[in-house]
Structures are given as C-alpha cells and as structure tokens.
Image 1 (tube, rainbow, N blue to C red):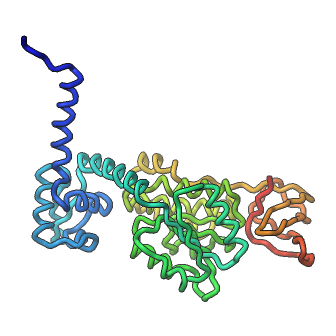
Image 2 (spheres, rainbow, N blue to C red; image 1 turned 60 degrees about the vertical axis):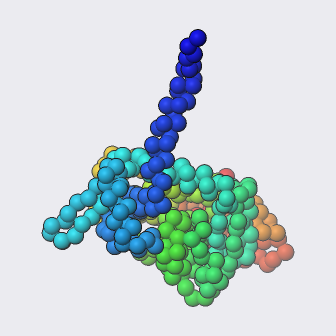
Image 3 (cartoon, helix red, strand yellow; image 1 turned 180 degrees about the horizontal axis):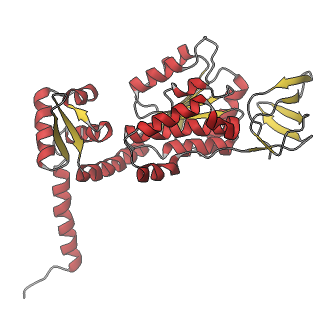
Length: 351
C-alpha cells in the first residue's frame, strides 16, 4: 500500500528547507557582522567596515561579494569624490531586523543589563539606585562611581546604560566620559541625570537624553523606556531622537519660552539637516519622551523620602498653576537645621 505524508509533515519539511537556505547566509563567519555594520553605518566605505570589524582585506572583499550576490547590500560609485560606498538593500534591512531579534535573545540568555551610575551626591545616588531597582527588578548589574576618573575603569563594550551627573567633583562635566563610552560601546545609551538646568552646552553633549533632578520613579522609567525603544535603529535615527530629546529637556525646564532660546533653534537646524523624510520623523516621535509639566499649588507641603530622611518642602511664593522653574522654596530636613531661601532652578514634582 502506498503511504502519503501528512500535511503537517509536508509543512515541516518545507520549513526545514527554507530554514536551511536562510541559515546558509550566515554559515560564513563574517556575513552577519558585515551586514550589521553596513545597515547601521549606511552609507559606508570599505575602510569604515574594517574600523568596526577585525577582518582581513581578502575576507572582507569575499564577504561583500557574497552579500552583493544575495542582493542584501548595494554597491555604488561616488564619481565626484572618487570612492565606492555600500548601502543596505530593502532585503538586507529586513534581515537585519531578524539579527537584532537574535541579539536580544542572546543578551537575555547570557547577559544582565550593565548600568553605570556616575553621581557624586550619596543620597541622590541611593535614590536613583532604588528607582532603577524598582524599574528593572532583576537581570541587571549596577556600577556606582562618584567621579569621572573612577567611572573610566568601568567603561566597557558590555555597558547598556550610563546615568551621568553633569557636574562632578573632579572638575569635569562628563563630556570626557561620554566620548570614552561612545568609543568603547556604540550601542550604549547615555542619559544625563542632573540638577543642572539644560543650557546652550546641551547641543554639544553626545548623549541620548537629558533628565533634570529631582526625578520621580515614573519619569525615570519613561525616559529609560524611551531610549530602549531606539535599540537597533540606525545612527541617523538615533541622532534625530537625541536632538528631539534635548528639545524636550529644554521645554521641560523653560516651558514654551524654550522655543525662542538659541540652543533650541540650533537643535532645530540639526534636525532639519538630517536626511530623513517627514513620514520617518513622525514614526520616530513615539520614542521621544514627553514634556513634563509641573503642577504647583500655593502653600503646598510636600513630603519626599530622600535617603534615610524625610524631606519636607513648603512652597512660599505664589506661582501660577503650571510653572517650570519655581523661584524660591523653603526646606527643612529631619535632624537638620531649617534652611531658609533655598533657591532651586529645577522643577519640583508635586502630586
């Protein structure tokens, strides 16, 4: 009697056939890595690829030829500048998205999130550490340092996040550390978490987001979620989102008047120069943090748990209902002297 395979068996065999064909693309050692670099550095020159991958010229030429043959990348000649550039094809871009799924899977299997917190104020560091623990209850390692010099020893390719105070006791404002982090770990996200109100310098800071202290748990979670959503995007899209996040920080600090500030306009110019169409920009807006509006009421008492103390705050002037930078507050801390006229230039979150 003749036997027939079931539809399920036929389907399985077909899947195995396509699986074998798909896996064959990556049976060569360098295909996936070269494809990944071309996608994220698009357009890229030959020598740029070797800056990211330790590969011989012979092997790179062979790998590029195979990726071209499979229509995963595109080779173009720039006659004006006399150079050859490689760009990703639509098929290659789709395949890279699957590679990113593999990267996330491997990261979850083998690695905890690696977070570097650089904060010189002990109570602020403890508060942020507790917030991180609440936001990411397990599966992370937090490294805490109080100076740029100390933090340098913790910078590695395994870092996922750097939470950095802007003004640190060793006389540096963190710019040196951000350059080191970018050189060692391009996929790491850098968030400034500082009591320093953002100013003109924010344009030059090589960061992904800027959060003004004091910061609530929910606000910090929203910013971390925002930048995490950028993982796997191209450098061009990350640059756009970083510029937009800086604008949000300015709006949070100064309200609508931020739009007339020179740093805000400079960020607008950067955004306009980026070769992204409006449809792409609109899609990316979902990864931009929201502007925080701070609601204040006259003569409102706040009780904030801060380190091992309760921090009581009395707002003594009469601001409008929505403000961004209250002028004066009076503060008293348990077991400490009353401190009149403590001037804050950062928002106080009143709930």
